[in-house]
Image 1 (cartoon, rainbow, N blue to C red):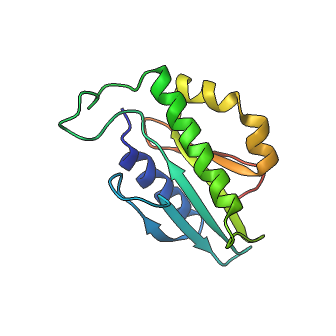
Image 2: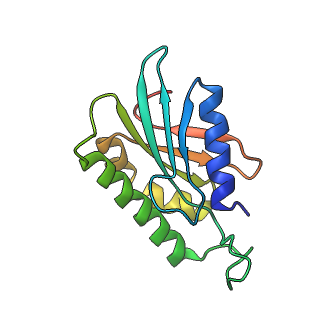
Length: 144
């Protein structure tokens, strides 16, 4: 099971391998944009990413180590989508900014993302899929 921290770490490693500098990397207990990264070359842009895991990483919680159910995954995808929309609406957003969400690549997350894929493309929101072996695949209307 991928914790949110695992998703964030995998995405940060992936971004660094593509020439990005990580400006912000939050833990799951911190509020704000989970990952902010910037690249100057070959084409400059800043990237803001909201991440979700597939299980709770709070050791005392009832869901610790257990996969989130369909309703919980739907809520997580909805929250990530809402955060992406907020970022796109923020005053500081400009043409050199990109917005993404990072999720575990599993059937439930894929089902809920597929149902909003057209809107993600229209809004130019990228999806960073993280596999259980922590490989990252980007589906976006833009490239890194």
